[in-house]
Length: 109
Image (cartoon, rainbow, N blue to C red; front, side):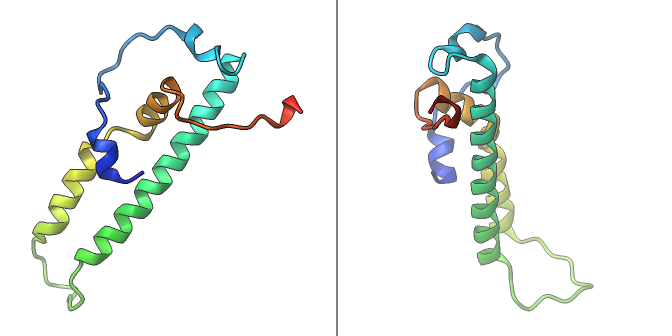
């Protein structure tokens, strides 16, 4: 999923108390659900990092000298966009709550 798609999601960014019993419905184990969400958050963070690096590489000028300091407007706007995206843990929690995460448990076989 692209960064703009994550930004469009209506995710509440404030900390709220959650009922932890809702997280063991699908897996049967609360801790297993936490591991699934953690691994998904790592995947999301890696995707966002890669996408940011690709986009920032497009905006960097090629003829830079070490002493020259300047303001690159496109790169500042790109950074602001990525700062407004919810954290990967919040995105993983949202996906888990809405059954958008596919997982396969090897111990069930």
